[in-house]
Amino acid sequence: MTVTGGGHSTRTVITGMGLATPHGLGVEEFWAATRIGKNAIGPVTRFDVSAYPAGLAGEIHGFRAEDHLPGRLVAQTDRMTQLALVAADRAFRDADVAPGDLPAYGIGVVTAVGSGGFEFGERELRKLWSLGANHVSAYQSFAWFPTVNTGQIAIRSGSRGPNGVLIGDQAGGLDALGQARRQIRRGSRLIAAGGFESSLTPLGWAARLSTGLMSTCDDPGRAYLPFHPACRGYVPGEGGALLILEDERSVRAREAATIHAELAGYSATLDPRPGSGREPGLRRAIELALADAGTAPAGVDVVFADAAGTPELDAAEVRAIVGVFGPRAVPVTAPKTMIGRLLAGGAPVDVVTAVMAIREGLIPPTINVEPTAARELDLVVGRPRTASVRTALVLARGHGGFNSAVVLRAVD
Amino acid sequence: MKGLIVSKHEFTIKDLKRILLEGAGADEGVDLDDDILDTDFEELGYESLALLETGGRIEREYGITLDDDVITDSRTPRALVAAINAILQALVEA
Image 1 (cartoon, rainbow over the protein chains, first blue to last red):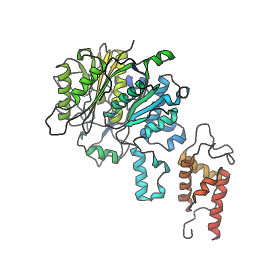
Image 2 (cartoon, one colour):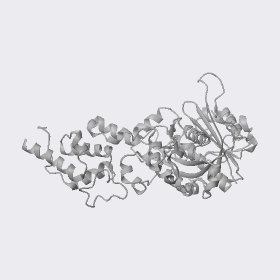
Image 3 (cartoon, rainbow over the protein chains, first blue to last red):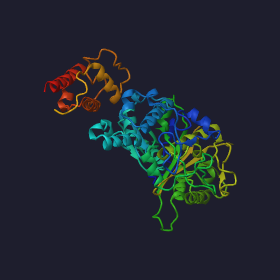
Image 4 (cartoon, rainbow over the protein chains, first blue to last red):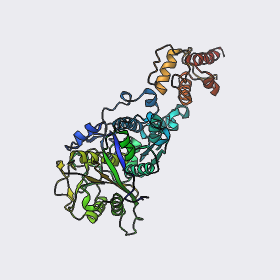
């Protein structure tokens, strides 16, 4: 839930963006692939997936942590943390901030995660059971923790301010941004916030399969079809994004920075108990986020959908969007059809995409889905659409009933 | 300690560098190929956890058991190499 309404005197703005996605490690590289609707979903190569019913993912290919990070850090970190650290370096650079130049207690880090350092943890568990406890790495003491991304980014950037971790599956990535804004309003100078995920391992795969929400289709062009009658689940991916958030006044004071957008609205709700017959919480999350931003539905230029890809969840999202905006009243898109659902990393990547849509006046497409799908939604399918985008709404839902929404607004 | 398989009888600075790199990596700006024998581990970027991991790897590879104070008292590569060799030597003589 939001704690403050619209009309707040300080504006929280995004000044830096860093990414690690199946569409590339840099924002420019990511956007070049995303704007044209390039598919990055393919067969899983990180482990032998042949024994499982699902075998497609959005993987980050060709990433070598040692090309980007000192050996001391590589040895003690999971792939998820390595991706987070590389994205963090880029985000600080993009914001034109050397973290060491700022007061340590004024900088905070808030990240979201869905699982933890699966690859590292699973490898050490194998050693524990096959070789014995004395073969387990000393770094197992923290490398697999859900809190490790925040911790390692904080250590590397010298942050001693309000650091935290939010866990809410796919919704957690937006909750991290909401928490960042809260901390800035409380007086923090700068908060780095976002989310990362990389659990393309046998254990991570089995855990995801257990939800029954993953697609078992083996055709990369048909496996993830949100809002489509043939939809049968989602395809997972790995990666995420980190954003640098600051108080607009201190950004203006330091002049060097580019303001990408304002984080104008945020809200989070929980679904009612299953079987209660009450409306899911997504519509209320949208309404509260718009109210928080002081924006009427007609003021929104594009919606980045959660796009779960299962009939029931998609229908609920269509009801929520149509309920707030009316039928076919606002362009809706799900660029995550290109890279898969990144869980905690997914929504921060959507936020970066929304910022780029605002900057470039271009809405990237939902791919693979035919134009006839979801007649009630004005779904941007097949090819990108040029549009004047001043305000964007990003939605995310997490397994277990979490709903979050953020509103981003252009800053002149 | 009898009954353990002693695979090697001498522990060299080369062995230590390899194990440090495998277990804990190397810091930016630190070249393990330099003469590091008398440089404090802390100065080389290896804090207590890195040395714990290094000690564990030496134990497994050489089939020995290290008391905690072997690691905490050996502040430099030269001291650690000497301490490990003293343990290996004692095993051979036992």
